[in-house]
Image (cartoon, rainbow, N blue to C red; front, side, top):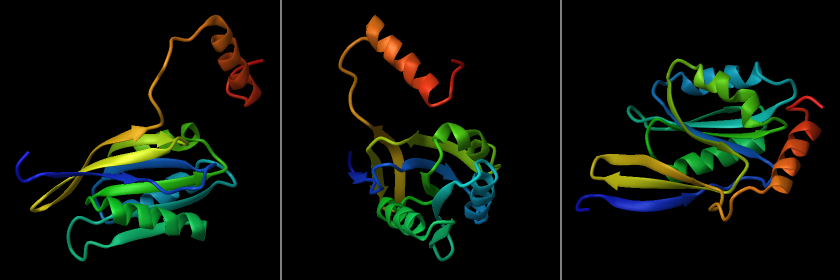
Length: 164
């Protein structure tokens, strides 16, 4: 496409960390996301980075874990797209925080919430960069069999998300 350059940004994160990437639009986003996360799960550790799209166009940083804050910031800066946020989480799953994040009034989209390896596909034009999608994990290779279903159900019960 003339005038558009596509690139891929691989997200850097600790293996055990969850990553949540989305789009929101107001300078208070970083603080509002902080409040949403801090109020969701006792003991959660997280780092938040939010790319401004105007004004000084800084990557705004919040969080309660310096390493995760730094990593989230570096990932957001490499993505570059305005109004994009990157959250790295330890000691919680996305399911524990996703409704709180989606409930933040300025959040308009969540691209992914996962522990998988993530690559962000960005499109750059003359006036800026946009996230156009994410690659979350690996491709599916087969249909689930009965023993796979039994393993999945046992795992969900083991980690406390379904009744015994």
